[in-house]
Image 1 (cartoon, rainbow, N blue to C red):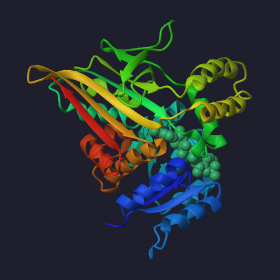
Image 2: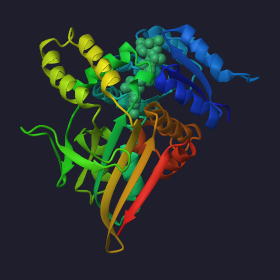
Image 3: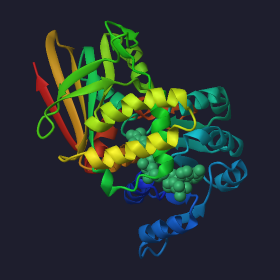
Image 4: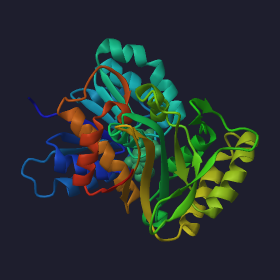
Length: 376
Ligand SMILES: NC(=O)c1ccc[n+]([C@@H]2O[C@H](COP(=O)([O-])OP(=O)(O)OC[C@H]3O[C@@H](n4cnc5c(N)ncnc54)[C@H](OP(=O)(O)O)[C@@H]3O)[C@@H](O)[C@H]2O)c1
């Protein structure tokens, strides 16, 4: 079988570069690193190829805003991997991938992106292509963790996933496009969670907060509900489930309370003009007020019944580097795609399509710390 060629859009960004490194290490795929700067793509490709006699990485200048150049670039490629802050160009990327007949994967967190991809769902199926969306850490891992633990129960009743995202933002070059995309996405976050067997939207009191104990050095923290497409599928997969949801951790007091409180009224009053100043305030707040200890962590707490006895399990995945924690699950998912074991026609999410036990095993191999606690 010939080696697959993947085009990574945003291949020299924070996530894209780490993803490329992992794919070079754990697969034999050939990679094209693309973005709007040929200079940056060349520098990263050169570093990744090193002294390799058969270089596997090629740089490419490519702008997702331009459908024609996307089409040219997609010819001769098996899959486009979207690791770029290009949610607004999802229509371009998906429709050109469909025209050329290549598969698709993304790590983009965007409700708008999901709506656009759903529009293409029937065409994706008809053309026999495999589109995998919501790759990475969150979205991407919470659903995998619940599925992984779910196999241990005869009946799983509850499964909540909480997160800690305490990143040393100053050490990364968070681009303006990415910051703008983050601010635009905050507007469309859905905050429903699954309570007593039904999805509940936040009431007048606002979104639902839970407290979860993440252990040292983060201990007990508040997290707020955030609906992810992958969590929506879980009650169908586990019919005994009555309580589930994903709960995102805080950034820091300034971003949580000052930026978020200003964001909604400002973007309501100035939907276009407000985005840039709010994204600058957010980046300043992230850089200034996020303090150590740094780390990124996901914890799934599940309870239910096994052999007529109550059982509680907690699975914690963590890594000090939030971008590595994004790239590693994406790479682990792509390993399953590259060997053909999960490739099937249709629009899928990483969390529901992948084989959870293998994904967790591969994450461990890639250096993600994994801890399982059991209590009967
Ligand atoms: N699922 C998860 O767990 C998770 C976690 C973190 C981030 N993400 C997502 O990952 C994406 C990338 O985030 P990041 O922090 O890695 O961003 P980043 O470091 O700022 O990199 C963004 C990349 O996208 C490229 N890009 C931007 N606009 C482009 C365009 N029009 N055409 C082609 N390339 C373009 C940039 O290059 P140029 O600007 O030079 O073109 C850069 O290479 C974001 O959508 C973010 O939401 C997901």
